Image 1 (tube, rainbow, N blue to C red):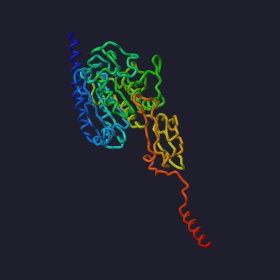
Image 2 (image 1 turned 180 degrees about the vertical axis):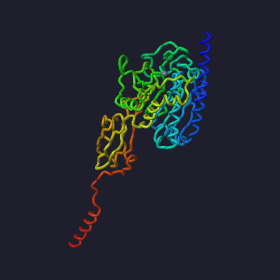
Image 3 (image 1 turned 30 degrees about the vertical axis):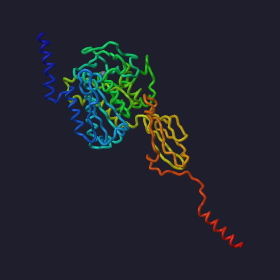
Length: 422
Ligand SMILES: [Zn+2]
């Protein structure tokens, strides 16, 4: 018994000694809330801190930081239009290192953007460090209702890998909830994500140190990922910078299934390193998370390439040349009467310039940047204006106007001829 007591004292005392000797120990609910708010307030031109929800039992704030250039000057519509990366963490409240990863990433994007605004130009980042505030407060996987929030989303809800029985701390079950999207935390996250033009969604967890796909693509319950080529390229790029491999998820109704299936973003779980908060310092954590943060960074830096991305190469001789610079195919490229079903990544196409009935050039080209459709019509549709993109002066269709000079000449000649006859 004495040995056990001594061990307990060591386990409790160690982090305090360790923490004071080598730096601060990792966050808890109150310090992450405070630090996140403080961090956002340091960059008022580019960051806004918000509490966008409340936990079910403890009424703890669920907070996020919204990041974009001149953010307070943007209308809601302008903000919503920006290609967006969303990072969240701690759907499972006992997975602290994912919270640290979200915080570090936010901090680093803010620092880099403040030094060089092009790092942020034309994009938006939203970070929610703690989805399951009640669970995180007491180091529990599930929320206060015993629901595994990462089985509660209304996409493929309950199809596999979930339980029908609530599970409370210290047990860590996979209760899917009483209905799809039943939990207040799930609803808050869905509402936040619905206000974004979402390109990439990274949901932080800890445990297996790899990347998890939105749904099973092998074995029982396998369903194809309609944008698989894009996913493959993304996963390969992730692996190149982080060394992380990927796998099927273990359950249905995960936030990433909804993120891709309903909200059309490349969505994956990043299972970051597992380190218990009570022995880790920020320095230790930053080191351990280095490879995952490189992957987050890769996704951010290539955000607008995540899907088809059609660029105008040239407009000349009644032809318009387009190139898809995105990592995925572009679909249903439509210009006037011309429709091209698919343009692969790196592929070029040439279209004929078309004209309206008033002979002005048709200006808009539309396409879908993803193959998946999502829950709202035309979620993935992009419209590009030839004039805006190229500064191209509107071409008038060539019409054989009667030559004014010729008319005058003819009139003059005929008068002269007539007068001679007189
Ligand atoms: Zn987890």
